[in-house]
Image 1 (tube, rainbow, N blue to C red):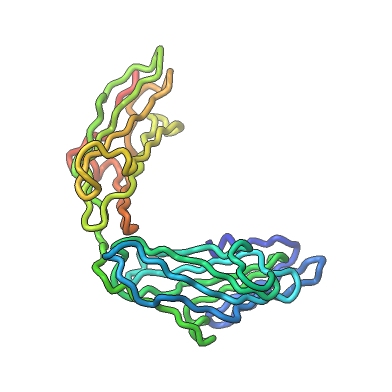
Image 2 (cartoon, helix red, strand yellow):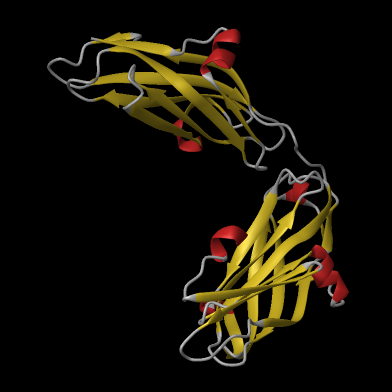
Length: 280
């Protein structure tokens, strides 16, 4: 996200490197070459327990920009392991006082239930003005300015991804010569304590030029619950689909605590699951 925000929106870009701080200045016809600056930054609470439910952290910021005014920004926290993150954009609609050249902003981050236990740290905060000048603060830069950079999730956390326990297709051989064919995919998925959230799969044609995708969501539950449940979705192979063996190239799962895992065909086969459908 930070890299994409460094795209040049004008003809000339100057980048100044300072330890822990990147300042990008874009020359424009308006003559605004100064990026926005963070004057105040705080969040509350700095301790919470997500084993009781989703935790909301309120963030207050005051941002100044000399000419063109703040256009957008973002702030993100990284989990203790660095494997998870919670982030939010900062936009004009978050302005609660002042204006885009000297304004106070208020945003709310939501930490999912059973978020990773321990100390979460502000990983980045960037602000960009309407002249495309960008300033990026990392953890150390924020600390050097005297701002707090960490909060603590004290409750039980879930760091284990969902487990795929079974995977079946209603048909492993279909004929799409005259009409489309539907294949029901059934998956048994377990996850505790957070619970399953979403899975995605992709079948690829023999040539590799075609694909069919499907998403399993909580509302596709047909038996059990999100801790241990059976889910079912329907994939449709269109008329005159490419003939031959279609194979799952990836099957990814994620739980409500943001833990994820992905399987490729070989891994699914090693678990004893069917991975192919033959199309005639």
